[in-house]
Length: 192
Ligand code: GAR
Image (cartoon, rainbow, N blue to C red; front, side, top):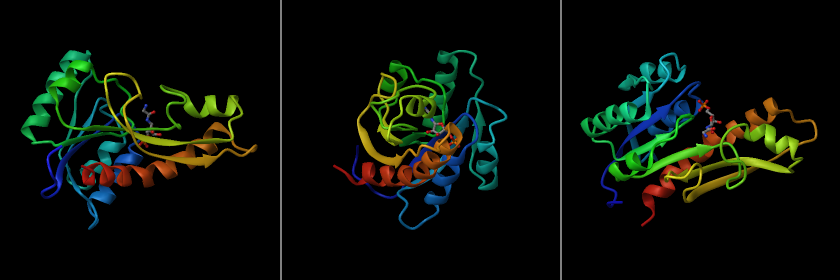
């Protein structure tokens, strides 16, 4: 990545609730922020996260996911038009193709609700509880062509209590997600 001169134009991709988007917007408005969110994209027109973008007057676009190629073609055009330097996937529940990742030669980050490489994909909290794990957590990693497998930038653990349900564990993990995503961005953008 080129050396850091000013804030990086960032696009955030979402599919739903958008609590990580909300935390990234909050971070982007702080002094320590190294990003400017210039674009929010959702594949779901009723994603609650779009309200956060609207409230902060951030350009936001719904792209219908009829198929991967049409979605990614439209996305690439938007990224170029908005001079996007960094993409943050924040609860974006679609998989970007290898060809998209090759075409878009800038970092793409993802946040995942488990201690990767454990529990790639869906239902991470359910799996952690079923397997009686002592810890779960969240991971921010670089996106590559394999699902939830790129280089890990930051990871943080939470203890799973006997009394935890999927719901309470999700809540605890989400809380740390909101803390580590901004940290991971700062770490990525200040490393060589
Ligand atoms: C978050 O827990 C995020 O880690 C997860 O979806 C949730 C989105 O919440 N992402 C994935 O599972 C991606 N594989 P949010 O919309 O409130 O940020």
